[in-house]
Amino acid sequence: MMAVPFSHTLVERLAQARRVAVLTGAGISAESGIPTFRDPGGLWQKFRPEELANVSAFLRNPELVQGWYRHRRLVALEKAPNAGHDALVALEKLVLDFTLVTQNVDDLHNRAGSKNVLELHGNITHNYCINCERAATDEALVPLAEGTAMRCHDCGGLLRPDVVWFGEMLPEGAMEKAERAAQRADVFLSIGTSAVVYPAAGLPLTAKKWGAYVAEINVEASAIASYVDEVILGKAGAVLPKLVEAVERVRV
Ligand code: OAD
Image (cartoon, rainbow, N blue to C red; front, side, top):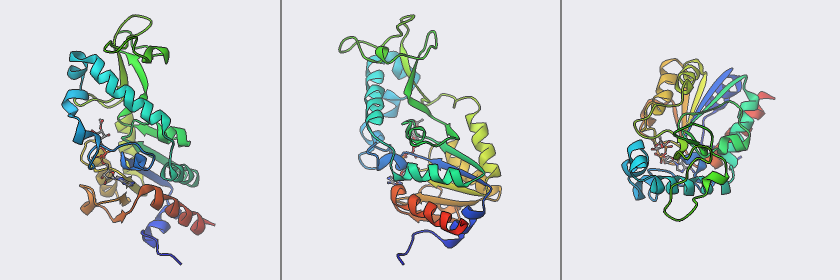
């Protein structure tokens, strides 16, 4: 039989778990063709966050910031969930109480069919008016001319993506729910995240402190790898389907 990169302990713990919480980062969408932030070739290697991902940059140069997010939104919409996203949908069906906390804004967990998803950093496919706060229509998300800002069709206010920028609060209640899920989890999986952006990166550590078995799945050790119970080196799209299949086999 081919060796699997995870322990039997993890399979057993997942098979017996009543509560499972998962944190995902950009790495789970890498195999869908969406660039990560900090890998070579990642977004923060090419762009400076302070020029694009904060409210003052947006107000200074709305066309530039809107254009960058519009491009990322269109990329996300043309890509599809991969085997890693699908495996988490299958895992959710096996577990009584399952929470998927994601730092990703690409909407791929929802499109894959995951149900209990907490989007800590928002969702790039949603846009709203900073003036009247109405959701933007698809027609409004097309610039009228090169170099002009996209504006609300109702009130003329500037449109912005529904994502969390540096210096902004997380969506109301999301972090509290994520914290509770981490505290209550029997098993916690941290997948495809460099685990350097807080408060999200603190969730696996909270889970560990409260007694969960914590495993990381990443192509390389993350910033919190030395604190977790098990580090599984591999691509999420390859490891997760095997892991979920193994859990299904133990449960029958
Ligand atoms: P990063 O780009 O910081 O980290 C991506 C992680 O995925 C790295 O640890 C890679 O080793 C790993 N990785 C790459 N390909 C993988 C694969 N196929 N399978 C498994 N792992 C893989 O992205 P995040 O940790 O998500 O915030 O970044 C966190 C936050 O920083 C983002 O949500 C964003 C950014 O600034 C905001 O926009 C608010």
